[in-house]
Length: 309
Image (cartoon, rainbow, N blue to C red; front, side):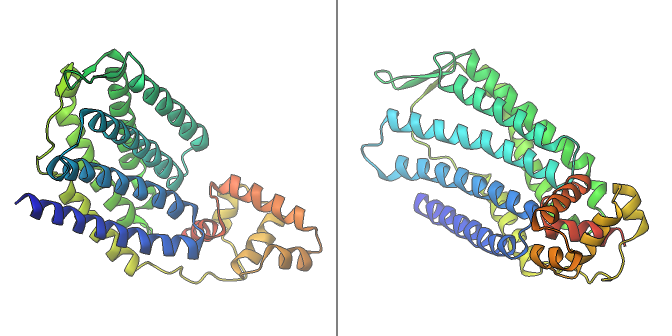
């Protein structure tokens, strides 16, 4: 039975690798900042599963698996959990174009680093090698509370801004990601009281079934299916940008001209030649357009223009 569990976990990891490969292909093809952020998030998801399965495998198959190794791998798992939450927040505030999204991401990144420092400090978690136990202090509890509050913030942002993409091609993609995140949030909420109350954990063999691997596998299949049917950009009229778009984002006449050239597939050099301006000026205008619209790439700009037609 234990060998079957390991085989199942390896199958789940293969599903995750397939999902990441196809998502990465479309990320490279479109140069979409949203897809880039999603791929970073998904890599971290997969690393958590790999590390957790590694603990299971070492417990079952390695005779010399020690409390020290268990402690170190558990620490890596905690770091990855924190990183996933920061990556989730960064992905969501980006895809929804939340105001001050860069500042929000930076704040949560800094607090994540502080939390990791607390976990590894004497105030957090310390290993008693002789007795093969880990002592948890207030630093660990503070880090755990931060993790849960940050996760709560991510869920609130996700569902709170969902209406922004409800009528777009991104709806199913974002909704699927939120449903998967909700499973993890529910699991965190369920175990929060127990984890806050624990002060000592003894080294033992990690032989319990990883129930979280089931929604992970299902989500991997969803990601594969989504990107196998990835919605190609619908054509945009090459001679117009809607008045609503121009008004909503305060686009100037020169910026409108550059957006039209982007719609036509022109490179920065082509735009500079056709408008008789310098390449640096084109890049400056594009930077200003991205800032106004709240995007980070040509693909995301076109998607925003398309949604306003």
